[in-house]
Image (cartoon, rainbow over all chains, first blue to last red; front, side):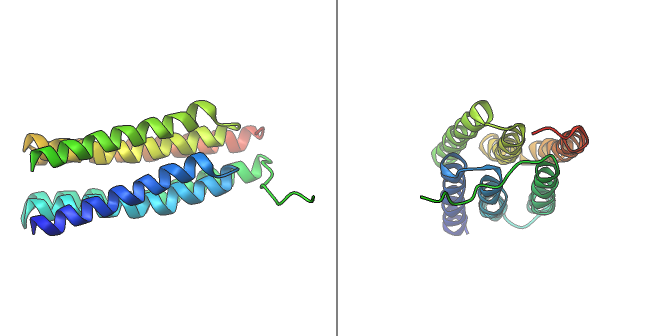
Length: 99
Length: 88
């Protein structure tokens, strides 16, 4: 159980690291939100699931899984609301430059 | 085992600093909102890991649930306000 939880936490840290690199390297707000919402949700899922496995079966595991479900529902919804606001406020998407 | 969780805490703090660069640097205000969303996700995970280190998860998990709900309300308020104001 402990080995499995360590493996899940390390995989989640890898995904969170990829999300952070994407936040810095990508060119505009739409692609950055792609990095933040998708990869960040997967990384948070892996880390919190590993922590709940470390707790063993019981009320603590159930509570951590409630936080996990909440995060999994809310993270894409927040990203969608922010991006809809950005699109309606008139932010132009980044397109390929003609050389 | 405690050292591993302290390592996880340090890694999450470094990732929060990376997102903070985007919050300070971001060209439009929506970049800053996205960076704050990422920071609050990291903070929720950070609180649960801290509870695991101190062996008091049943208390810290409630704090992180409240923080997630507050994060949702704040992000929706900012998004609605910026959508109605209409300037990038």
